[in-house]
Length: 348
Image 1 (spheres, rainbow, N blue to C red):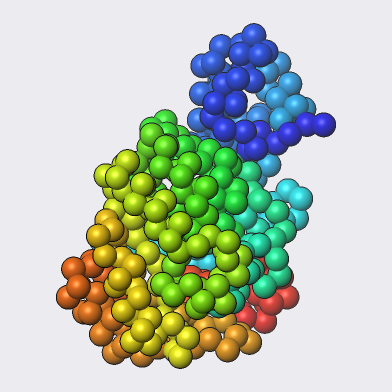
Image 2: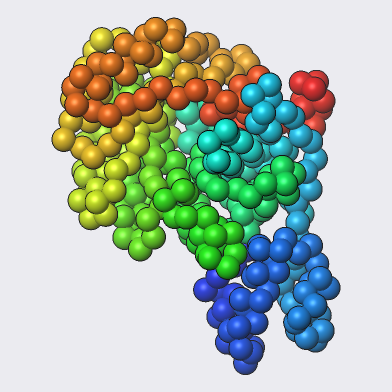
């Protein structure tokens, strides 16, 4: 059975060429056509011999996702519903800014198996993990629609990246490759719910990709209720893995903390967070909870977010409050859900 070319990493495509007795240079040519030039067909690859194009078209089909629907927020961000060759649906978001950065929030899976209580993505479970090229395709689709080069990528959309580790890392390397998307490693961030084995593997990677961890509670009993999918990833074990990460790489990671009214916003919660973060090379991103239809969770006031930020800073822990983007089109953190087309049409 043939496998789509976008299921392969850079190294794997090079291996295919070697096994076929072809020059590895042909791998670079094909990858350049696919990712730097966004070719939709092998027929577009005019500097590759026809016989190779025909063989690859049969053995390694080239698929490009379709932007089924698009919504534009009042803040200029755009959310896209992409449909892949097997009808799998994924949402991704383009986030332009006035400071020269243009960020894409990419998904690593369609759906999610983590089941975080406050997040829309996991409500329908996991459909499937994405291939490396399908993750990159989101960046290419947004880039083409805006007509502007993407400078930053955050893998913070649908799915748990470390539950799809190999494909996610392969996608990051395609994005980072100087002859492909040429996005700096430090401008690419992976966000995990705290999968310890994934963090340990990530620590050993040679590239300087950035790490973010969705924490949302520093008290074990509160975190277990909010994030049942990582109940077995204890806070103490997670901390040890993150300390090893910083010690080995010298890089700071960030904690994502969505403040929820009456859930994780008490004085005890704040004190626990301060205690947990002390002596770690970290930054705390306080996020305004983005409401999900039918969810009982509500955001806290901006004033309380400011108090938390100030208290963290006073304790020597770098902290900031993040401005929500795209919430009016359900395109903000925790709102991506691969909604069926009928839902999009209702929203529009």
